[in-house]
Length: 453
Image (cartoon, rainbow, N blue to C red; front, side, top):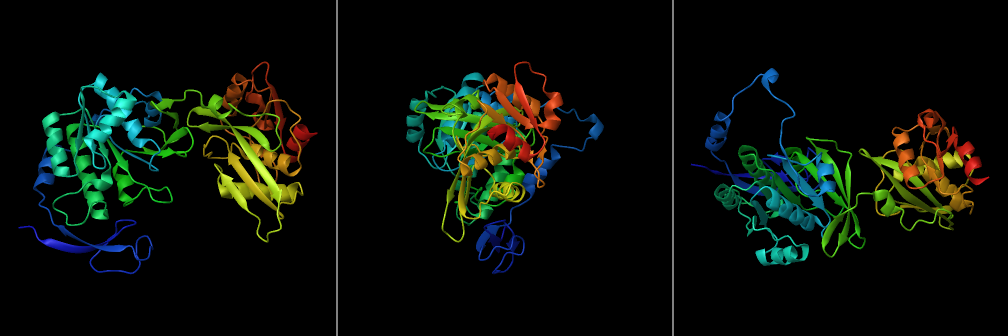
């Protein structure tokens, strides 16, 4: 007979201890240990699952033959690596109201119309609420089934009776197992429920989409082990007050983790943006002080965005350094290079940098453009080059270093009608487009002279 066992579980990392601890020895978080009571479960089920499989030589395993389902949304297929893999477990997170349920309902409707039965399990909304959203999104396939349920055992029974081709669980923090005495959303419940869902999906070759809550800092709520268990982790970025949404891959066992999908939120649902550069530059004034267009690579896709900088004099002892869409450490590095190499003082100025459109740029593609935007603002000078695009990494010695995929960004700039493209000199030999005025620069001082004088 199973006996109850009391353990203390860290709400941050899931570490278990037999006694209460003030600080978790695994993640060093204070006051995170919570008492939980759970039953030790029989291993009969796990043994039966193990008996279905047997060890196979790696030479006899066929690779690259997993089947993908077309979600009917090209941007979602892109971030998933070409579609949804059968038997995969995908975790999607984002701020409340960002559009997670909207995207999943649209996906469920597309798959239901093309492949067969789809089960949407909701632990937060009633069937009537989802029906209202379905009417608005025109997601009314007869093969789309909705159930409001939070008991994992009942969900498994529904799946066995229906045999769906795709299952959505919204959200994992609302699920619970009868064998655990802790409340839904606790570390033990989230971990065990996710483990049960993984077992159901892998054994039945059913792809799952699981919605997860986020903390105030925008990180996934619950134990960190949840991210390790799933195959794919997707993150929805953007502001609820803005119409653009960005779906980014954090982890993907079946594809690259550097792709993004761009959507626009409308009353009829999320609409795909096939050309993000055109959208991000829609209202850009190319001859404006403190504004520079930069090119970045998001996976295999070159994207052009506008970076705006504002440098304002301040009397405060500690000037502000505010970066939206740019890593603060990267901004501080660029400011240090400008002060040291160009003798431009920023110690008595507040500095604000913003990437228009809500995109968070990663890497070093935008270093040169950010530096030129800061110089333009502090000197109150506009660029002398008409429709200029800047690409390049900035070194600590003031040199402009070459970047990868520069030629692809230049091609994108040419398509968008840019006349002057400032790039590192060592990338010049790869540019072979006619009609493009590629301006090679080796140092930041050289770039300033060619752009502003």
